[in-house]
Length: 192
Ligand SMILES: Nc1ncnc2c1ncn2[C@@H]1O[C@H](COP(=O)(O)OP(=O)(O)OP(=O)(O)O)[C@@H](O)[C@H]1O
Ligand SMILES: O=C(O)C1=C[C@@H](O)[C@@H](O)[C@H](O)C1
Ligand SMILES: [Mg+2]
Image (cartoon, rainbow, N blue to C red; front, side, top):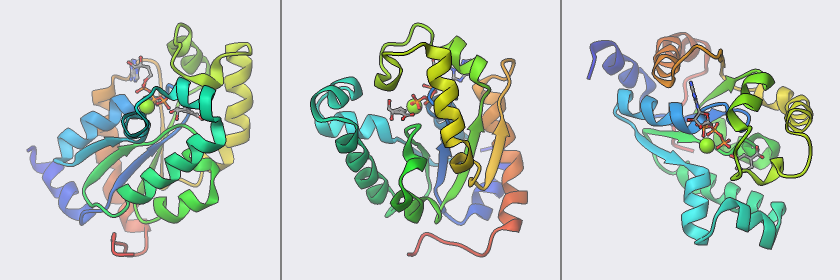
C-alpha cells in the first residue's frame, strides 16, 4: 500500500467511510477504488439489499414499494455499522431518514456532489433506477436534488465532481482530504 494511504488508513482508526450522493454520482464506482486504496472492505447497500431480497431494486419497488425498500436500507445500514474498516457505497436516498443519520454519524460521510447535467448524461439509458422511470429525466433529477441537497450537505466532506475526473482521481482526492476532515471532527470511533 502506498505510504500516504497507509497513514490515512491509520488515522481513520477503523471508522467506516460512507459515500452519499445522487443516483449516478459515482458512489459505487469510487467506493470500490477507495476501499482498495485504503485496504478497507467494500460494501454497496443497494447490492446487499438485492442479494438479501433475491430480486432487483426495480422489482422491490414494483412489488413492495419504496417504503419497504427504505426499511430494508435502514436495516442494512444498521448491520454495516457494527463493522469497522468498510467503505460503504450507499443508495442515493439513504440521507432521507433521520434514523439513518444515527448510524452515518459514527463514520466519515463523503458527499459526491455531481452536477445534474452530468447525472443526466450518465443515466440517460439506465433502466435500473426505479425513481427515474416516469418523468423527464432532467426534471426528475433536478427536483430530487433540490429536495435532498440540504441533507447531503450534512456530510463531513463534500467532493465536487466534474466530468473530466476518473473514479481513480476522485478516490485519491477523498484520501487526500481525509486528514483535514478528521482534524475538524470530535474524537470518534465505531464503539457505539
Ligand atoms: N468518474 C466517472 N467517470 C465516468 N463515468 C463514471 C464515473 N463515475 C461513475 N461513472 C459511471 O456512471 C454510472 C453511475 O455510476 P455509479 O453506479 O457508480 O453511481 P452511484 O452513485 O452508485 O448510483 P446509485 O445511487 O444509483 O447507486 C455508471 O455507469 C458508472 O460507470
Ligand atoms: O436516489 C435514490 O433514491 C435511489 C438510489 C439508488 O441507489 C437506489 O437505492 C434506488 O434506486 C433509490
Ligand atoms: Mg450505487
